[in-house]
Length: 280
Image (cartoon, rainbow, N blue to C red):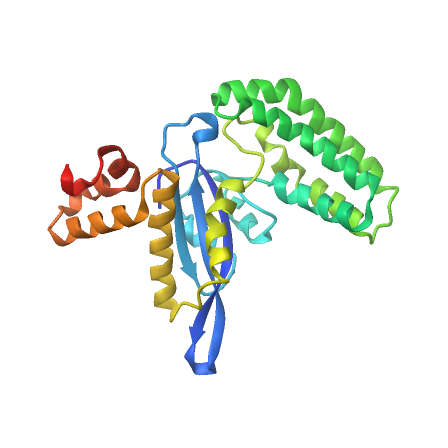
């Protein structure tokens, strides 16, 4: 993969041809993104897609073998296995938490859900004014302002949980937040941590939209090739590199004998800064 101690992780289903049954099966593209621009970090943005035939927890465990640091994740329980040796901490996603309350507010008009959205919105308002600042500045602002908002929200959610039916969707939304509170408040201890998994959600979106326009991977091998192309194209886009020009030039260079020990020169962020390698 790529070097980083802060990554975003998620997965999305893709259809894969299953000739033995005369139909398609569901494979997964696991996606891992590096995004340091919100805290002015030194590493360029990147996204890596890996195909797997299923969503078993062993997939991210295998993909992230050797990874040490913070992993931004959604509510998928399989990521918990990564924390067993203490090398990985999970940062939970406020966007997924907010979505739970939004769905309740839209369906029922619940004033409690609406108030939860308002309070979560206060956290995002603070984040908006520190985006792009240094991690130290972000952390200082969070400790001065976000911490109080989060503490008040936690106390308020605990109180509301005792007042609503335990089987209601609102209670479910509250329990979802409270059960992930350590992960949701990880950002209060590290200025590099984001409130949500939006960077990897954005990387997944083209695949999700593409399901309406394409058919399926022809095989598991096709799924692997799909993942490679997604990795290159999305990383190009993240680094403001035109994907077609990049792929055309890099393939020409590789056919022309570009040294294997200098492949790093052809990574999208290096290629983008120097222009087409063939013209360098």
